[in-house]
Length: 226
Image (cartoon, rainbow, N blue to C red; front, side):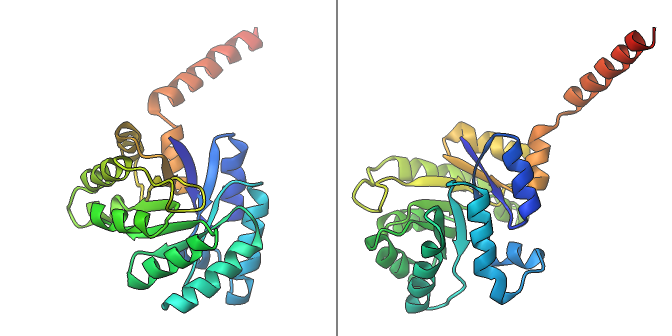
């Protein structure tokens, strides 16, 4: 399973990339707002992320509400850099815009997916990536992992080679909060986990690893002090 980082923060992206395990970036309007960015700087900021990622897929989300607006904005975003993927919301307009953009060779990441039926509609509409959310289900005391499992199983049942520019569909496990979310997503066969920096660092650290490093450092300090 590949790791994407879910952020619009350039420093976080650079740090995750330095670890050698980053395979892409996902962003959304809320994440961009957290950077303090302004409307006129949105597209230049997406271009900076695309350049920083050196060809790795970067999802930039349309904020339009109509089919025409999504298609227009999708064309503009995808033209910024060859590695930009247009992110669209799961809704009637999003599906129609997805089909139109896919027909033009634009890769689409369909977001805000919460059910297998939504995922199947997105794949048929030409989505290259589908982002089912896990943590938001947990927020309302439902099992987000079981919904993710249904999405993975349904999508992997079929051949999508004629539906989108790359001829394949990848499942991005989104709204990831914990290392267990990542583990379970990998066990069920999700292609990608997109993880905020806080959760990514939780995946990196373990109390036994940290204790072992501290013990090694203390033992070596005794050696070097002799």
